[in-house]
Length: 250
Image (cartoon, rainbow, N blue to C red; front, top):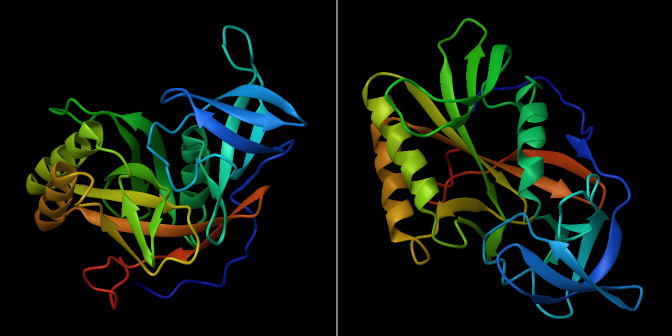
């Protein structure tokens, strides 16, 4: 990785009005039951992953009252769960804002200073809509997909924690674009702290893992970035290497 100018550890995102609670059970992929102030409450779970190492009976969690409760069946949203080394952010609705703020800071962005950035873009000939199209200053456009990683196993950050046909499709299409000469990348927002490297979760999703390897072989660059969450602030901690080559940071 090229040398970067000194950066400030200013938050990429600050969350207010989070409430402590205790996880009780998950009713389905998107609804859980928690205990708050001695009462049971139903909360919305934005992350469809299994999250078994974070959402288990008795574990500490953080929730926030929904800003727009109209039409919702739950008044609260699950925001984070306590992991081995601290809070792990679990609300996937925040990924876009975190990624945008990271990408707009050239001192920490894997792509340097940007001349342009567009969200929710579909390249010609693709069925998938990717998170961003970037135009680095003095460079060619980059098609970028962003994923959130919440699973830690020992010193490894693993993605996904549940099978994802959508994620595999994204990587296959990025690989096809890269094969046509386009610049393509995937950035993983790694929320568990204390990991040493990142790898696709072969045991959980062999199809995604194969799509990951094929995409890398086709020229898709991979950028895992470590983030910390102290219960209110999301802070960039630095790039994380791939497990296949710990001496190389992408």
